[in-house]
Length: 146
Image 1 (cartoon, rainbow, N blue to C red):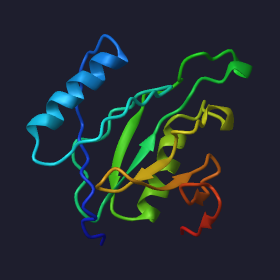
Image 2 (image 1 turned 180 degrees about the horizontal axis):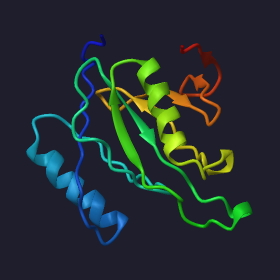
Image 3 (image 1 turned 180 degrees about the vertical axis):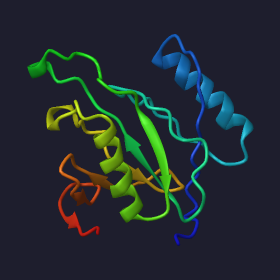
C-alpha cells in the first residue's frame, strides 16, 4: 500500500475567457492561501473525468476507445468507463471484459488514454495495451501480470 507523498491533487472546473483571466484568478487564490499555489494552463486533446474516489491501496483503470479513421470512425465507438480495482490482475480482467463486451473494437480503437491505470493520487502507474500486455507509464518496460 502506498503512503501519502504530500502531493495535493485539486479538481476544479472554471470558465475563463483567456489565459490572462486564468492567471489573474490563480493569483487571487494564491494571495488568499497560506502557501504559494502554482497555476499552469494545460491543454488536453480530450478531457476525461476521473472517478470521484479511489480508495487508498486501490487503482482505477480507464476503459475507453478512440475512433479509427481507417474504419470510417471519427468518434469513439464505445462510452468511456472507469473501473476501481485492487490489483493489476483485476485491472487486466477489467480490460479483457471491456473488450469482450465491445467486440467491434479493434487495436486501432485503443488510444493513448485507453487502459491507463491510476492510483488514489491520480498518478499513472501502468498502462494496458490492446493485447492485454501491461507497461510502465513511460512504456519502456513490460510489467508481468497474471
